[in-house]
Image (cartoon, one colour):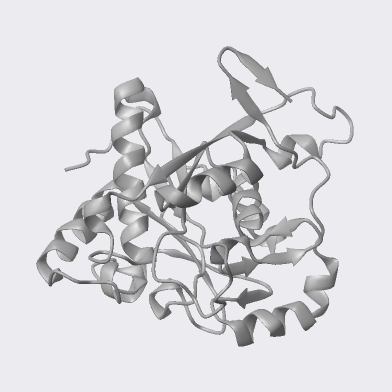
Length: 272
């Protein structure tokens, strides 16, 4: 069971990639679909997570997907909040590390869903962080699905709440939340993780590849959540919605951030 450490506050962003494939049927991972020139769904999700002010980013995927995705994302990303400071650009650079979590082979074709990937990523983030120090153990998890494209100015607006110990937060679009399987962002804490993990074990039938966010996160009571309208939002988890997004004016305005370049660590030497 995960226990909350009240002496520190660490928000870990979970980006679930592993799960049942969508209907794109491309020879690459669905999260690598482009949304702009040289800008992919997974990169947008990582940038959105960085906009939220999270402390770490955990990408949950299949092991065979890691080389190509890691080649695109690198090992860390700048916090956009500091990069955009026009008065003192890069004076207070904050680097957000990106960790890659490979789904356990025993879960393949058994717990193969994005919702399970979130729980597995949270569990891994806790275990890895606790081995480093109790001061870096996550207190809150922010779920950012690569298949939900949200207005990042709204994410930036809610940054103080995401980085604080206030009530949990969810985003709403047309009165729908993540419990409607919309791929909208939401947060959950340690206690809620334990509840959802126990609940998943109770409903586990041996082959749960069709479990949705509504199924796995059913124990979460969203009445106590802070609810924030998402602004404009697109669920691109199928081909029809993906095409609708590309035809929209918002898609034409999305560009790859200039400062979002590949950053790698090579031993004790950092390549920029």
